[in-house]
Image 1 (cartoon, rainbow, N blue to C red):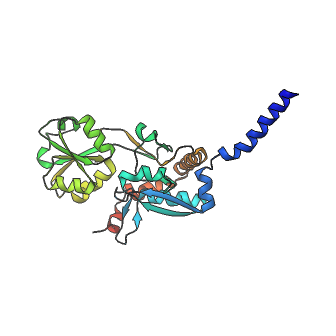
Image 2 (tube, rainbow, N blue to C red):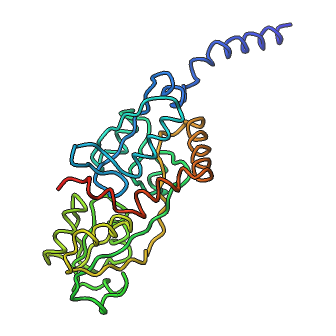
Image 3 (tube, helix red, strand yellow):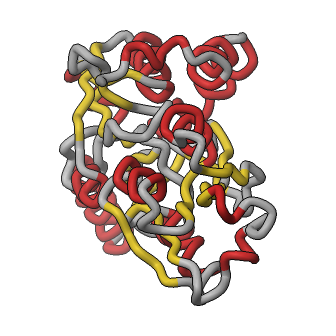
Length: 267
């Protein structure tokens, strides 16, 4: 009898304590709030950028709009500096990051990623005088070259890891790095392929050579806070649906296979 009473007491205590230990999933919070808050740094063409009217547009933005619509909620875009984008997610400034973020083991220790929605890699722009001389990242691995990339990105990591003999310079923005390259202040700039293709077409002024064969494998993913299994499951399932019903292809063609959107950018 005493054993039964003890077990019953433990069971009742567990039932009382259980509701206090269960955390609400972010998916439920979004539905209750009626708003999906998405953090991004608008400076990574064609994923997210600001048009002439000051509106954030891009591939990730269109994807975010589709996600919010499927949830039946409004969309709120939160512009955030790259170096603080993960801490802001962790302190609940927004619900998820959609900003061309590469999935890495280091980032995955702090945050959770949905399945990759696109795969990119690092590519290189070099001064035209090195055409035929610099054919890959291996040729830049020499102390006589000055190579740049954006601070805190996988481009910076790849440069320091694979072109470590070169003199390295970091830039706050991609635009600054490409501009210094055009002006001859550095010999090469390393960054993600999608942005580099656009930068070469728009800003090279006939002074650059584009080495467009990626030398790294980098899957990009939507990031959320850890411990949100329902939200993660929903995102993965919706991404699979988008890729199989033609929605994803339509958005991809708009931003990667057409340059019509370039006219909307700030001059």
